Amino acid sequence: MKILPLHPHISAYLTKHTLEIKFDKQIRFLKANLRHPGLEVELLEPKHLNFWSFRVDQKYRAIFIFRDSDTIEIIDVNNHYQ
Image 1 (cartoon, rainbow, N blue to C red):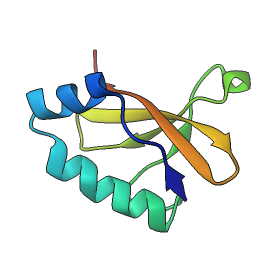
Image 2 (image 1 turned 90 degrees about the vertical axis):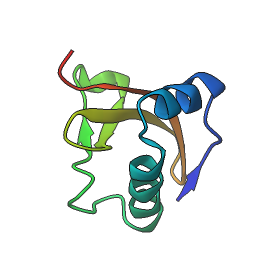
Image 3 (image 1 turned 180 degrees about the horizontal axis):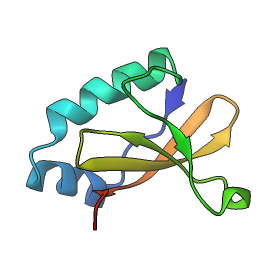
Image 4 (image 1 turned 60 degrees about the vertical axis):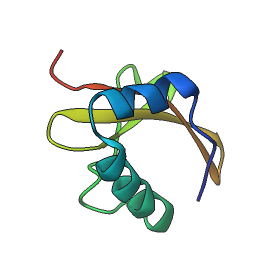
């Protein structure tokens, strides 16, 4: 699985919320196995838009899209409960 480089605003968000280490760990899982249970990958509603998310930690999730069958672009990281 290939993951495109993060947009600077996403990197800044990770730094601001001290999520870099947790995020890097989850990215390693994502590259190795999209269905890793610690990621809790899910297709978001409305499903026809094909936005997916994975867990960064209990509070934060990363939103991503498939650019092709083997390439992912992370488009946001946010507080799951806001």
